[in-house]
Amino acid sequence: MRSNGFPSALNRASGRRILRMCWRVSTRVQTSRNYTTTLETGPRKITPLEQIILTSIRATGPIPVSNYMQLCLGHPVYGYYMKGDPLGVAGDFITSPEITQVFGELIAVWFISALQAMIPPNGASATTGGHKRKLRLVELGPGRGTLSSDILRVLTGPLASRIGLPPVTNVHLVEMSPALRAKQEKTLERYTSAVSKPSNSHNPLSIEWHDHIDDIPVNDEDGTQTLVIANEFFDALPINIFEKAVDGWHEVLVDEYTSPNVLIPNNPGGGIISGASYPRTAGPTSTLASPAYHPRLRFVLSKEPVPVLALSTNKRFASLPVGTRVEYSRGSVGTMRSLARLIGGGDNEPQQEQGAERKSGGGLGLIIDYGAERFFSSSFRGFRNHEITDPFHQPGNSDLTANVDFATLKDAVEDFSNVCVHGAISQARFLVSMGLEARVAGLMRAAVAEEGRSSSSSSSPSVMSKEVTTTTTTTMMGKRRSEMIREGAMKLVDEGPVGMGKTFQVMALSSSSLVPPSPSPLLSVTTEGQDGAGADGGSGSSSASPLYPF
Image 1: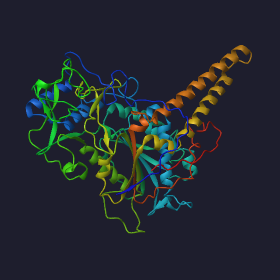
Image 2: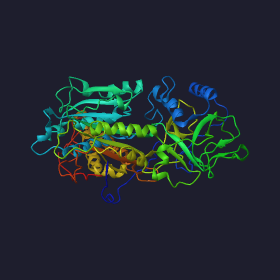
Image 3: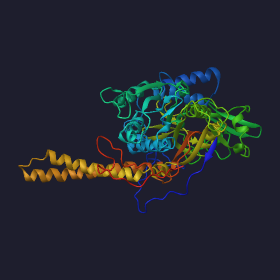
Image 4: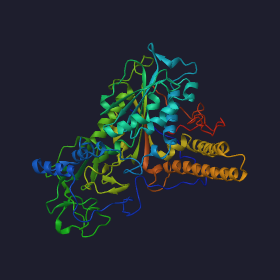
């Protein structure tokens, strides 16, 4: 693995208005962790999944946090993601693709920018080993399919045809929810229909669904290039929590709430504290400590130390003091290695000799999620109704998540000589570098112009007052829509303390056959439109080329 740096701090236009938005956050109760917390009062009805978990604990003892997460999110009947659509205003959270189309379009711009480094001016790389180059898109956790749709609109559009981008032939979606699979199929049907096939594809796209990333074929024979996007996927993968003690690492487990000994999150001393010292009021040391809160589950520490090779052999964790807790996701490590195999074209092999022909077309990947290049101790939390909740609140009815340790993701593919890691950098830096402001300006002009055209065609020329009123109203509507476009995009680059532009990080992967381009003169982000309108409102003009962000 090679790790590439990135340029100096991003230039932002002075005085540019940035709207602050707390990701998946409301503002009812603010805690020391800068997010809201819902505390339960009084006895509550037990959920079916909670009963299953309690029965299991009574039979076999406390369970790891990873098992608890797997049951809560993926139980075939009562799991959170198996029961419906959690996205949108009516759901529990809203993701970036649901806020603005610009998010997916700029991801596609990055894919094209990097792929261009593989395409010589004479187009010689269109074939390799007798096979015509092809592209396939892989998305992990595709939600409603909105992000894939926005990416495909660019990758299969007129711009892709003009620059000779290889055709996209199929899409692979890793999704376990039947309800979300149905919505993804509906969202992407424009790309699978023979009537409205993409302009940069000879046939309608083939879409396949998979329960796991390992179910996707590596494609190491036909020269297919793989483009992988994982937006807010790794944060939902199960974690284990370990606490360092004098005799080694002990695991934090989930147990039934029956004993007076309770593990309090953020307890300054760490470990288990007795019921006698149980805090009587909720405060910055705990979100579980309210006497009005009646949990049926709790955290406890394993009695004996457990072998944790990933922590005991990693120098990042060697000098941590006793009492430190570490959230570690084995699932993220496994997924990252599988992702590297897809991008690298197969299992890790020694670096090929210079000039040796590569059977696989290689690939690119982007991981976008909230977190940082460090470990976290107490980020495990629930989400319900756009509020952060206790992780034991309504098991099976609440989303569960934890911050992503991007340093662990890097470590996971360190031994892959055929994969290069770039970043991580902030989401704000990534999106602005790829041309966010130019794209948003174009969409805003298009919104105003579209409303103006609508008013001209719908007004009655025989009634002047009606025409003036209609024109004025539609112009105002265009301006309001224009403002909504700008506000939505600015949420993504908000660099406030809990803004999406700062808390979300972007990490890229590429096969070693790809040379990350220098600041690229080849691409204007204002040439690709939506719904028949150019991204610059139809003017066809170009803006400055985006700066390659990594």
